[in-house]
Every structure is written in structure tokens, then in C-alpha cells.
Length: 431
Image 1: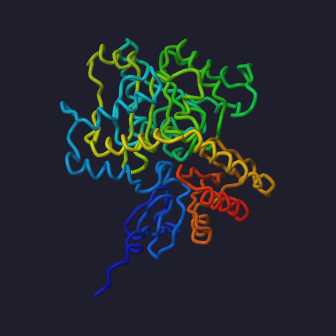
Image 2: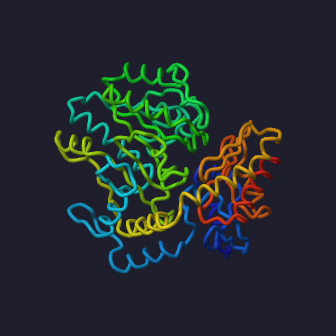
Image 3: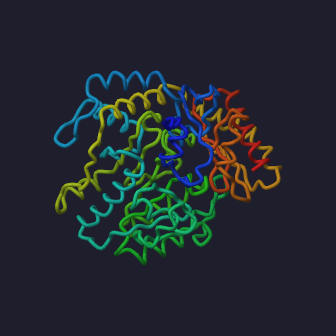
């Protein structure tokens, strides 16, 4: 009789991991448990999760406040449909969100995941334009080097040439792309519209004013598109252009929300507010998949006043009570501490400890914003090679493109953060 496959053997034979070649899957670690900043492997090796498990586990694994809330909720109401029904966790989460999000965003739509949040935002924009008597407005403008998720419509506004989804371009909706905002965060703002990117945006919105429903972008920080930080004044002036041409402004804050940038939301770097805001990842402190799309009364009531009047979206697990309970607890954990001071300390330490990377061969740039640290190389870096070094460094990092980066959990101690930056420097020397 053939012996049963070990868990790792079964994994490599049958389970398909994200962005992985199933014929050459690379090294995969079997995780036994996780707590705080650490993930513990099958053999007892402990690794610092320097990625916050793809940017969501900001309060650490198995946070006692969040897990307690989930345990209490699962004993009373794990799930119920949201059509025609409601529950206290959804209301309580709504109250907390309205306390910390932009004042104008008063309407809350709960979603399953970040990608779905983007899909919902784009559907809102199209349905709003239809209700306003503009049925031809079904396309979108966005900036290059952006990333908005893996679902179908979200893919259409990811970078069409260098993004992860470029091979699908022939099958996706054709959208309108402008150059990424050229003035970087920390640089002096340039008022020349031909130098700051707004001249190009104006031309695109003007030419497409009978076809473009919304302008969607990641505010201040482009995540998977290159970990690029740009000047918030671009967003202030883009708001005015959107208003001029009747285009809705959509901010995708799935990666940047909940203090990751040093502000509660990257939107807070601006003096304007979007029409639609997408949130996810850190919403539940990474303990369960959940997301939300917020909009203002103008958009919500506009859709309500059109034909058919109802917003045409309704996920099965919308407003899942277990996820709502986790999100309430995660927001309480964040707001119940000096999060500004905590993020400022993380930023200062990463600035100091990553600075030596600037003198290493092959390093193009080093940048830090809030609890985001990046070493950008002048060549592609291998995630598989980085994984192989994890047991030696004690730190799990997953580089992508040209970037060796970290989004560490907010609970990281100075010693743990030093281990992360040391591992990043080592990868910069050898990858």
C-alpha cells in the first residue's frame, strides 16, 4: 500500500498557491501555529512575519482581544443573511467606521474581500452615472503602476503593461491610463501641470467625459505596483478635475488604511475626500476576510433615485457577524492606543536601520512611510530565494518585482524590528 502523502507532499501535489507555478512551486513552509509577530513552523522554527501576512495582521496573530470577540460571536450568531435582516455587530462596526473615516462618507456597504470592495466601488460609479442620465459612462480612468485586486473588473484598472495581469488585457475592459503621479512624497510640489501629471489627467478626463464614470487610484502609496510614495497634492487637484468633468473619485485604501502610513488613512494626507472609499486587509486585524466600500449621500441617493433604484450587488456573506465582531475589536485595539506614536517610532527606526542599504551595490532607492519600509533594487528579486533564507534570518520576507519590503506588525518590539531590517539588508546583499 502506498503510504499517505505528508502534508507538504499533499500541498505540492494538489494545492495551488498564489502567483505560483504549480510545476515549480518553490519552497513552502508548513506553519503549525502563529502568535504575536511570530509564525511557528512544523519543526519548531519561529519566524517573524515581517509581511503582516500580506499587510493585514497589523496587531499580530491571535490577538487576545480580537479572538475573544470572535469566540463570543461564534457562540451566538456566526452568520445570517443581510437581505432583510440586520444585527448588532454590523451596526456597531458601522458606528466605529463613521467615527474614523472621512466625514462625507455616510453610507457603508460590507463586502467579502478587498477585490470585491473595488468591484463594488466600480459598480457604484457606473450605476450612479446611469441614474444621472449618463448611461454611456461605464469606463474608468486610473494611474499606471496601480494595483486594485485580482477579480475581473479590478484587474482592468491594474497596470496594463507591467502589472501582474497584463496577459489578460485582451479580455478585459479597456480603461484610460495616465502616468503615475510624478512628484514623489517629500519632494517639493511642482505647479506646472505638465510636470506634476495633472495636465495629462485633465486631457484624459476631458476627452472621455461622456464615457468615464470614475477615477480610481491608491492614495499616496502604490502598493503591489511598486511601493511608490507620491505627493498628496496630486489628489487634492485631481479632486477638482473630477468635479469639473463629472467623474467620481475613488480611493482604494485596502492596503493603506488603519494607520499603516502613519495617518489613520492615506486620505488624511489630503485636504479633500473621495466619493467612494475601499477598505480591507487591516479591517479585522487580519483575523478573517472582510472589506467595506463607503460612499457619500450624493452617490447613494443618486443610485436610489434612478432606475432600478436598488444597488445591484449582494454577497452571500455580506456583513458576516463574525467578521463584524472581529473588525469592531480590531478598531478598538487600534484606537485604544497611541497609534500615531507607535507608527512614528517604527518609521524612525526603519529610517535609521535601512539607511546603510543606500551604499550597497544594486540598490536604487530606500524609502519609509509610516510602517512601510522599502529597499528598491535595480534588478528583479526572487521571492523563492528570499524564502530559502528565512530559517537563517528568522524573518519571513516575500519580495516582489524590484522591491525588498516590510509592513511589520504594529506590535513589533524594537528588537524584532531590528531583526527585520537586518534580514532586509542581507537580502539586498545577496539577491
